[in-house]
Amino acid sequence: MTSNEQQTQYARPDSEVQGRKGKNRLKLGYISGVVMATGAAMAFGVSVSHRGTTATDFPLVTSGRSGTGGGLTVAGGGKPSQVAQAPGDGKADRSVDAFARYSAQETPARENGTADLRTFESVYGLVDDHYVDTLPDATKMSRGAVRAMVSSLGDPNSFFVEPEQRALLDSEAKGRFAGIGAVIGIKGQKKEGYTDYKIVVVDPLPGSPAAKAGLKSGDIITHVDGKWVLGSDPILQISRLNEKYESRDPDDRSALIKELEAARKRTLGGVRFMLAQMQLRKGSGEKRTLTVERAGSAAPIKADLVTALTDVDPVTTKPVNGGKANLVRISLFTDKTAPEVKEALAGLPKGQGIVLDLRGNPGGSLAEAQKVGALFAPGKPFAVEIGQAGKRTRLTSSGAAGTGHPLVVLVDKGTARTAEALAASLQDASSATLIGGRTFGDGMSRMLYNLRDGSGFVLTTGKLISPKGYDWQLANGLAPKVPLTPGLTEDQVVAKAVAVLRNLPRTIAAAPVKKAQP
Figure 1 (cartoon, rainbow, N blue to C red):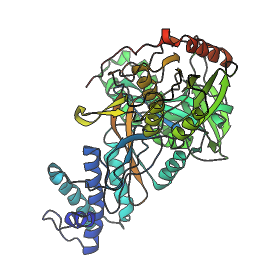
Figure 2: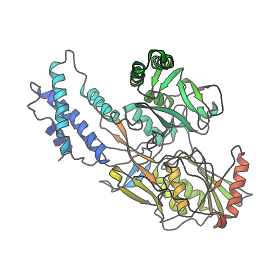
Figure 3: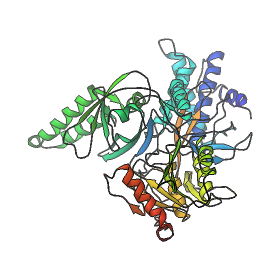
């Protein structure tokens, strides 16, 4: 069935909806078709084909922490993906950080969704027939329906994006990031009846406004331009506090009254969580004042900055240890990363040691991470993706031959997602020793589904674990084989890495296995 046939099918008259005009039936067909196709995509985790609707390229948006609401996004940054089969050329990128490259394919309607679709049609018909004022156009109503559907998942990492926001993500995929230029994460704390989410700085991008303003990994952004970042539904929070207030003894309400007033104050002077994230990752030449909480600091810290475009070179190299070894730093994974790494290694003598620096790397294209993995461990398992209903897909670093270079990998708390997947795969394959600090701990997969009107939505679709079953998300990050004391200078860190490189045969060890929970 073609996408046009799919639309007209949904536009047929229904006994529950009467008096609709022909043009409105066609409009309803468009809206309900989008809703059904979107719902099916959410259920099956496949790309959407609806009036040209496809899921295509887009960068790092956000990722979650199972059970804690954790995740990460690039505020003014982005990244990408994993190989899957799709119609057309037979290849597609499927994203761990919401960087997807999919050809269009037909999305089947779900039989058990018919009744719900008719409910939607009935409501639309009644609104169309009886609403007192002029209805918004079909585009606005369809976007509203998709936004509400994705929002109903209760996942802050699955969300609707307007065309302007999608264009921003496309730009990030090319390595140009607007806004404050910091990798940010989402972490949640369970409270009574709701989850309170926080925006956490994972790592500022090199040369970005965030870096120049002194933001550091681990900073929690509590205010944007003096407004509270509302990490939970403020109305629900106040409602829960009111319920607690009513159930308490009148003499035991003073603390709740203070808490209730504080919640109301935050609500009146706050900015919605999603809007705050977009404010951090868009704009150039705009003044921003951020308030952050920092571990070890008794008082909040204010940071004034001016947003700007930040261009990030994904790969940089330099000789170390007097030219006897080379440091290859990967800042993120884009479609340029693997070719640049391959070029950097091409002129090096066989056997010369490599320090692969993944510190502050927020992830990116899983396909590119696999290609980089193939340079060091060809043909080895790369990762296992756990999808809907626990389905497991094994990913492999395809390649005919490795580089022949001894390898150590530098990691820290800014190493996240596909960068963690690469580090874990090399460690599992006994191809590298991890050095540094514990990584961020995020392996959730995201997909961007592009809709024909230029909008789209991001959906959490799975989770990655290492080939041997190590769940770095469950373990709150990868623990390096050789931990480094915090506070070392850059020269000291590199010297430690080179020292491990010299004794590589005695230090390589596979990661301890921590089985993933289904």
